[in-house]
Image 1 (tube, rainbow, N blue to C red):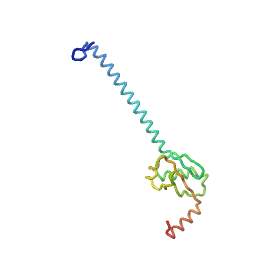
Image 2 (cartoon, one colour):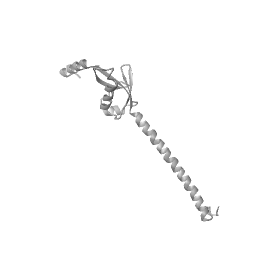
Image 3 (cartoon, helix red, strand yellow):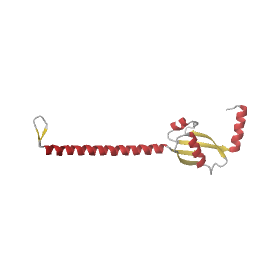
Image 4 (tube, rainbow, N blue to C red):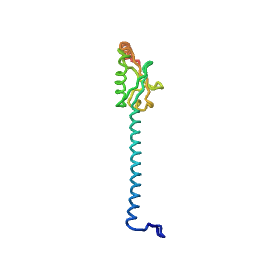
Length: 141
């Protein structure tokens, strides 16, 4: 096996076959490494996406960690009520805010909140009903 004056490989077909196999193996190894990296990146991306659906919630002085399967306000509210049912018995969830105190009232606002740390506010059911009735009668908002 050798190289001629035009820098072309020359030699027997067997030599050429061996070189082809070596190059082919290197390409296969490169492809395998690339696929492993792609698989690893995909797994990291999935873990990141899963962690994006982890919400940290403060209610009063207690902190809760919620795992949200849907990043919607309705689902967050359901999870909040379920997680705090022992501590907030007889109370109504009235407000959810981000760490800066901005109200979260839509799915879009929730999905734009990062990191997903929120405050949830509960109020006595009776007081909540009375105050809502008063505000609606007097059209105060």
